[in-house]
Image (tube, rainbow, N blue to C red):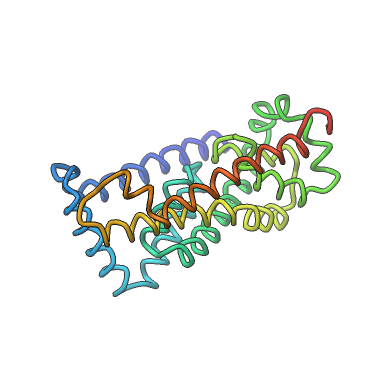
Length: 241
């Protein structure tokens, strides 16, 4: 059963990836990718499309994110896209909700069907953290999310808690809260890119990075990364385990 489901999930992931790429490249004119005016045209078209059918587009984006993340998809591009499409506030909320639900679904699937596989791959490497999570699984998993998953790629970090046997409610709410700082920063950058394309006449890296909507989120991103290093050393150091 688990082998069949694993094959199904792998095929589903590949199909969704190819459909996603097909939709992008069928809509995008590859020959005009070096033309800044083309990005302005795309921005105007997207703004009109989103404005006419906001709730339908929110639902479509929500469903795509849930399925994508539940199939071990990566998260950062989704955050930029949600910021570009919906702005930093709505984009942050819809990405928080959809990605947290997608991560919970992935965790549930991994717990039910692939527990032995996850244990065999990850338990030895992360066994030193099991005691910490058993003391207070919500707080430590929240710290884990705030620390960016300790540098673990997004897909694997969503299934790692299988070895800690975290309650699903703690998993969801710790993820939702712990994602907020980084998700808001990425969505703010996406919204800033959208605003820059709307206002600028010509593209310039200098003017882009001197844009307040771009450099401020980047500064906060660096600060969050430094804080995550501190959390990793203070909470998840070998001396604590």
